[in-house]
Image (cartoon, rainbow, N blue to C red; front, side, top):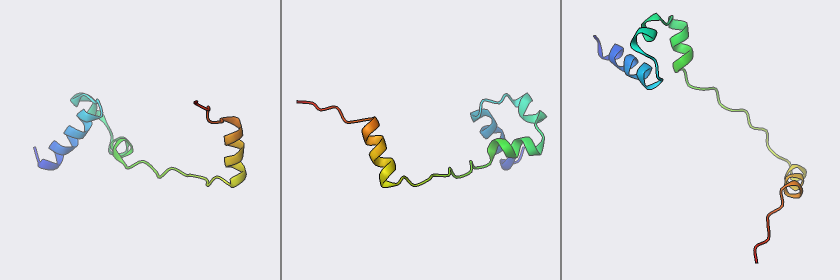
Length: 63
């Protein structure tokens, strides 16, 4: 077995796949399992958003 296949099998095992399931995967399925996740889209909060959150979730005063 080539080093690339060994690495792929180790990755599959780290994902919880049994070897039999790994060998049944199509290339498209394997790529979907191992591709890097898409970057999360983050919308910037406005000052008004921050004020609304602060009003909704005020800090508890500890004295």
